[in-house]
Structure formats: C-alpha cells, structure tokens
Length: 216
Image (cartoon, rainbow, N blue to C red):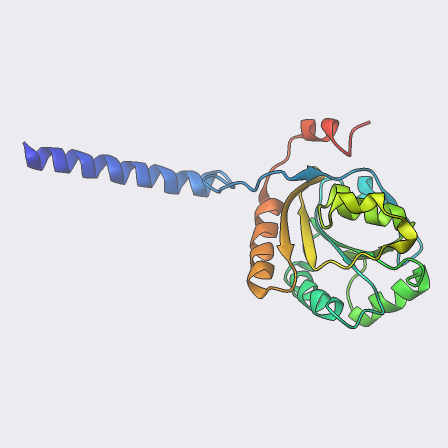
C-alpha cells in the first residue's frame, strides 16, 4: 500500500512539473512573477536632441528606461551613462525599447548641447533620446511620474533646486512604472536588463491605455 501511495504521488508530481514546463513554453510569461505597478507616467512634452517635440504618446506601446543626468556632471553621471550604455548595447536592435535621458540642468543643456552629447555617446538617437524642457516640468516628472526623487521637493522654490539622482525607472508599454534601480550598482543594472526582456515580451491589453497617460 505504501509503495502504491509513493508511486501515485511521484506520478502526480511529475505530471504537475511537466504541465508547468509545457505551459512556460507555450504561453509567454507563464510562471513569471510579474513586476508590480508603482505609478503611472503623467503627460509630458519635452524637446529632444534633434529639436523635435516628444511626449508620452510617442512612447505608447514601448518599454522605456527613464533617467536624469546633466552634460557637465563629473560625479555620478559618467558612471550612470556608462552603465546605461551597456543596457543600450544589449537592446540596440530592439525597436520596442527606448532610453529616455532627461537633463537636470536645462539652463545649460540646450538642444545643441544635448546633440553634441548624444553624438559623443555614439548611439542611435532613435533608440536613446536626450531631452530638455522647463525645469519645473522635468523635475515634476522625476518626482511624480518616475518616483526618482521625493515629491515633497516640488514645494520648494524651483530656482533653488537641483535634481541629482542615481536611479533609473523602468516603464512598461502601458506607461506604468514597474521598478526602480540603482544605476551605480552593477547587479541592479543586470537585473534591469533581465526585467526589460520580460516587459518586452509581456502582452498589454488596449484597455490599459484608457485609464492612464494614453487615455483621452
């Protein structure tokens, strides 16, 4: 009787494992632990390195990584963008991914300055956008949309502020922030790459767009 019980138990365990394996192959994303939704990106309009206006609508249906930097930075920014370039190199042929780098210093980082910086990075600016705009709008996006800084800082005088953050935000195809990463930590950059690959494969229902930044 004991042998039969062990045999039956083993059979059903193997059956369950086999079913799970087959489902992971047949259904993309089956069995993956989904990243939580942390926030929704609010509407924005900025200007990229080519002088073109870009908004959240231009990113509809794409996964993207948001960061903040400034071209004259000699502190953390070179390391941040060195790590970001690793991400870019891994996905540079993936049309479903964009990197969105916002300047923290729009008074200095004009369109021509961002263009020179983009050229120095030797990247495809269809895949990696460098944007500038109004300081208050840039900072509000960092705090309210991407959760890269404390929103309470919005109550300070904008002229007295300077945003300097080492964090990256991963945004899905529906404009939802799914995770924040420390861009100075190699293990978190590797994790970011893995999560990008997951989100690129993750299907998105059109109904998602009606309740967030892509609605109306």
